[in-house]
Image (cartoon, rainbow over all chains, first blue to last red; front, side, top):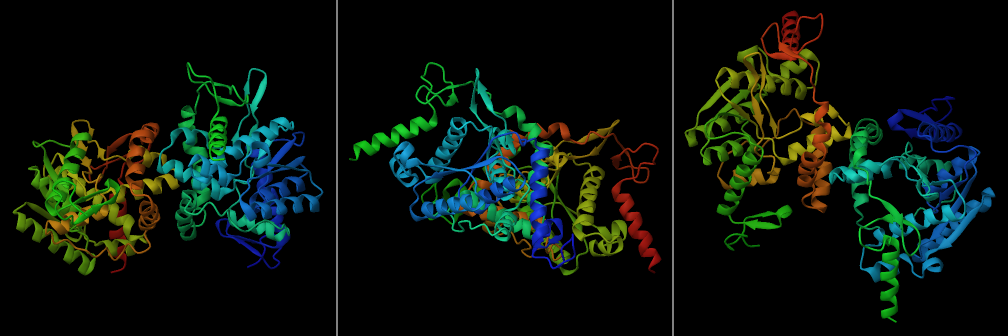
Length: 314
Length: 314
């Protein structure tokens, strides 16, 4: 196979585009695809201060790398989850990348910020690790972005991630989640304060194996191992099922996701949770108002439960 | 495992209902599920004359059997497709069942009605066999029902069939197909004539393996072999992908299908093809009007093409 641009030997084959690329033109292809996504979905401009949630995996390092290459003002944010050696190695990957690129990286840990790790939280609350982990990441990413004065929060969700989420939402017809599934979630303001920073996913046009190929070809030393706690995760099963179809018919994932955005998402727009958002009485973060009850966000409730149980077990 | 009704030894395990059944209570369970479906979706009443499209496979013989057991006036209709020994054996199964039950069966063949078989049609038109087969079956089922004075056309589509179709429609976001995907398609009238008979699917609550178990336990001698022409059929791949998920989480299929009907189908209702329907200038069957063109239905166009080419090759 030859590069579709320069006819040199191709190193990557993108089946759904029916195209091969040499190293340099594949890197350019990814840059172009991401630039197009940023433009099409009006994600951000060169004046914005951008915070990139960095896990040390291929997707988050790839999106950070593309944004820096494209000249954006992008700072990394690494949140230590305390998942043993996996977290140590993922932090090392994030730090090493930042040093090599001379890029700014903010590091926080759940243990220092809140007094627990993800495995501890799961044990203390009796919930699956992925649930507490997701809640804490969403909360901490948003809090860090607001505290440090960023306009935009970028995550590395790729096409495969979004399709798996869409598939799960369609299997259960979670109409409120379908209403919110978009490459951009606009900022949310209460009174004069931004309470949710604008969140964007510039890799929605990039498949998982393409972001892996990008990281590899750019010499980015990302952490390959998967989180040891996701075994049996339903999201993984959805990816498996759809990958079966993608292999038989390349382009299925892209068609499902962008077809949804164009033809079906508008039909679910009215389902978005329009509940009144108020400030949590403990942390000030936005939460849903319930009449006659002190507003308290899920994060504060979960944290309080975990710390109470931790205290009881001492 | 014990029967959930009588505590005798269970012979069928319905995982998504978390229930086992002995032979007699499983048969009753299927009767009850179908009766409930007929009632919930207002499919038909004991006064209606019902035509059941019978292929000789488990689903069509099972639905016919249940309707006869429930006391409905149900006549079978077998259409010979001319797919070699497969068609011979499937006809034998339909005829044997009708004789054993002393039920009325109408038999027609594509060869006698139109002068071609499904394999010939595929070769002559250069299209995949499933496409011409589906077009001819839809046309012939509807024509037979109208000519023979039936009120209702029943097909044996089961839960797995409907989920696979839904999945395909969601992968491609075929919004007009989503608008029409329902257990009931109402009759359509032009002027004073019914042109599309009412079509219903009483097995939408019954999974594929349940209809197979029903046929087996009732001693119905159905044709087990699959049509030899469906190799590589995308519908099969969709079933495979979803079966992966059903195995990990029983109830997934039912949730996806009935969740769709309840929560999403109404959002697509406006997408149904509201194009003007007129009579085909050749056969009188309903077809979409196109301004400035003589109305001619897909069936007549395809048939004309096939017969013209057949003539040329003589």
